[in-house]
Length: 144
Image (cartoon, rainbow, N blue to C red; front, top):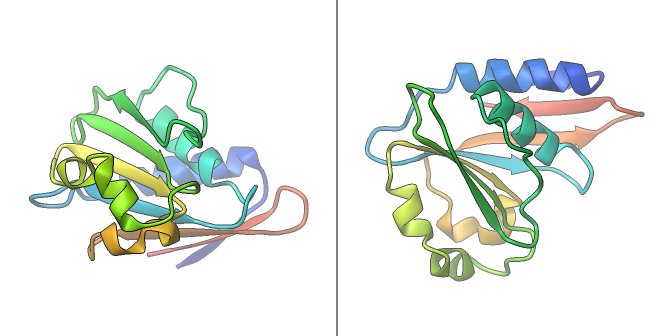
């Protein structure tokens, strides 16, 4: 599916709606792969998801720390894990950070930016969200 986002408020509404319709994976974490150019809105999408799930702390891109974990009081997921794989060079580098244990926890929702950098580690049942830049704040989001 594809949708055109016109501004930040529209992105917030879309992300909240998107996550509200996600169904938890059985036996493993629910993984959402966020793709797009620098500045496309991957972190903005993650921030909106976090807010919609009740995260009150500031959600920033985990570019330098690679991952941030947020406890959730949500009924569907116990934790939100936000990963930025931009600086990683392979799936092995992600696995060295405990990826296999993370992805094995059914109670977790994982949002991973730059999944193409760690392609071999991404599970087959991943949900894909691709964000393309448009004019100004406009974005085209392809998901499914």
